[in-house]
Image (tube, rainbow, N blue to C red; front, top):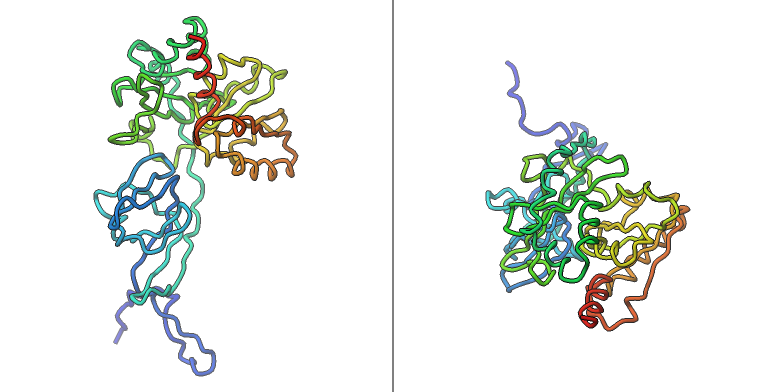
Length: 333
């Protein structure tokens, strides 16, 4: 008589000679959770946390579904992540099983899949967005402080777009040094040039609007397409796209680029710049964090320096070069 097939994977079971070889493994028990990275993670009540994921999207997470928490990381239950209302990506994250008594029964790290083929956004889609600037809050903000001709030049230089995602929204296109359109970051600014963060953080991506899977999108530095336009100019890197644009008007002797997030200062983004002189301008309060990356890149042969000029100003934590120069313009006017 044949034996019924087992539903248990081959790597679990007891050896017939267990008394001699000692082999005996069984499936893990307990609640499965995945390690999720966040840009920001904090308690908002005793029963819930607010997390900002790596794409800038906000999620409200029940405290009961957070099984372990670290510095901007948390193990979140598989049950919650699989829920219809949860949009957190977790399929390639490290996982743990938590037993009822709080102990960890097993740790697994999923084998990383082969990189997906990149999908570039059609150049025509980008060009179609480069219009309707009178409806673009960010553009109208620039015109308050800078000459119309200067603003027009920088909008063209960085291919700044207007989005229908929210009334007045801006698209900051990420174009690489081979002029492939890697991504388009959609953000909504108010009339004061500050990002709209309430009642929700108004950040989205063009590829999401087009239905392109995130795995096929390989982001790059904002402004990377300018790399080869003038070899005599050093590269200046800031965090915010807004700051790169404003500084291109204020100090045009540099080629200004942006990481589009403080966590994006990493070698895979900086690698195309290796033969160029680079100077970093972190937001106030981020100097020490970016300095660690500078030390690592210098050891690999990068000609990179970092400015701490903002640390000597009376700017608030998180403000940057654009805030400094716009404040100066306000004082002049």
